[in-house]
Length: 144
Image (cartoon, rainbow, N blue to C red; front, side, top):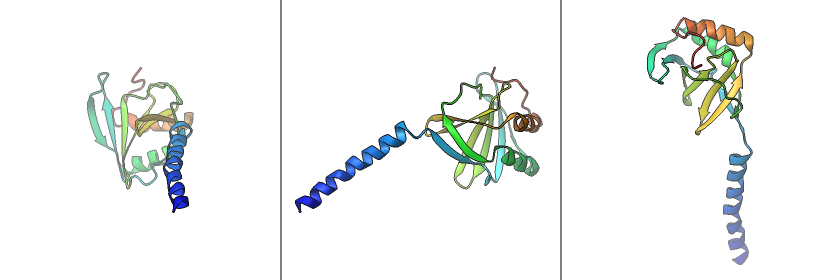
């Protein structure tokens, strides 16, 4: 009985070690917008208030899903100006919100469990994303 009790005492220690590992060492979070069924573009003013919320067409949804796709975001990788435009995806897992950079960088930010995660989409994809979002009221540069 004593052996069983001592083995059970190790379980909380193992759980705490696993939690510590994920908190301090796991800096990458996967994302996937390829399953999104709808996308709303929200444009915000300098005070952070939404001034426009527009659903995108199916063709533009497919194009943006292709541009952002799936990948991994890195915790606090950037100090980009990723404010001013919200891309709000409806997915099977729930709502996912992404914030493209409003300057000339190709960074995109998303928030997960209170942390800011960033990934880069490349200059060509950024130009295509910018062209699409301008149809919904985004004007570059923003958030600068």
